[in-house]
Length: 436
Ligand code: GLC
Image (cartoon, rainbow, N blue to C red; front, side):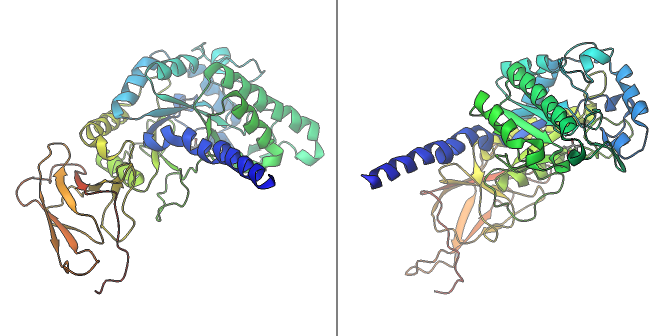
């Protein structure tokens, strides 16, 4: 009896914690590409988002002065969403409030906001959320839990702070309540699919009351996904700018990346990554089981810089041709089997090999136990030769697979072409030391 009860409880636990988690994460795991949007008053003079006053490149009042230039005069959330959709992205995350404390929505709290303090004079978050949902994309809301502009927040600039929590716990509690109220407003008004927290590093989970905030958000929407920056509450990891060298152990992760050197719009930053570089990073992320959250920074008018439009269009073009190898796939061959990136179809009966654009073949795959039924390029579908060499008839060990295409396809002008191998069943790999 006791045993049966334990078993029932265990099954219940698996359903809520185990299976529940992977079920709610499924859209995220399949999505592969998201677009991050940093839009705020920093776009007015092209200063570092929030960090400009924190790092004392300018005074706080000069920084906040920018709010008077935030016009949003050409802001069309439908245009943004069309572009995001065209890129192939399945979700998007907009900065509802950065570390400078300026809310893009009509907050009832007594604090900075675009509707109340800028000439734009309107909520610029809610129409975006509506357009995102209408387009069938998933909505992410970025929220900075630290707020260097708020009089009740502890930190201010890199070498000055307002107070220490231990000396004034009531004041800190007032700040925690501000976060709670703002998050409640966002939760009810925007009902995001994903919360992208930031700024958690300045305090402990206990100080932020992170478990209380996490519980509140999950009670409102049990399927909501939370990134790992609400100390201890996260569903997935968020490496930033720097690509992990090893395939991360975490089941779910997302690399966030700028298109030039900055998150927000800066007219002087011309250090654009090329579309080819972005696609190379994107496919590498996907081959290692992650998502790419690629950032754009609209101007204060709401226009998206044309370089970013071009990058998103190029991504869209690539995704339309090769999306089969990306969306809904899983991380591919472990290191050592193929010198490049690869993904598997979800049932692992297909392997997608990502090629360097200059590749002329043949390429080699080691340790593949399966028979290759067909090898063909995506986007055009030319079938190519899959030749196995070195297979010993009476040995269980596989031979070496060589794929060559000779003159069949000129790869030189293409960005990351993809070869699809259709196997005789789910992938089986040999990982031994060779020999007979
Ligand atoms: C960092 C920065 C912030 C930026 C964020 C995006 O946490 O503080 O400015 O918005 O990364 O990932």
